[in-house]
Image 1: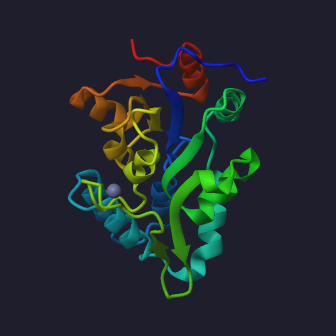
Image 2: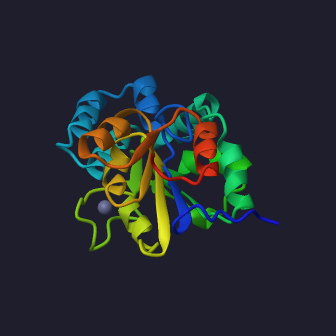
Length: 229
Ligand SMILES: [Mg+2]
Ligand SMILES: [Zn+2]
């Protein structure tokens, strides 16, 4: 029998980033660093400085790689990506407490799904971008693009669109993330578990956030009811 979590003001729901959050580092950046196609560094800089949308920049970076490298790129990620400690424990905690857990990833299907495979998360609880290797170069597809209510735009995988499906007066919305793809979502949730750039951004904007290093930190916090101090 699951333990009720009455200490939350509303039903909690978790939205968890993938790259640099579930995995120890950002897989897109790792691929670009490793295969080093000319031009990728400028694109990353433009994404980070928010001169270029995530959608545009990620699309442009993968277009620098020939589709013939599909297996090489995939294998590189699958053999080098590490999972952050405590991830299974967080999933177990969610299951035990009937807390819905969604992966909201700006990553790409061909590495997100295989890396998550051992954890048994239902496919309809994983949101990420798609890929098409039928042309000369890798083409990223955007099955979960921004909805009409997204005031950010160019998200690629629109985290706020997913979050908005859970009414804020009904759910206690919690985002877990580390970087630029999490910035728009962080503004509309009740609580953020943050690492890296996302911690800085939350501090700047005065958003309720709890810095974390491993998923064990998050479970410990949630066990105490999940309210910021
Ligand atoms: Mg990330
Ligand atoms: Zn959006």
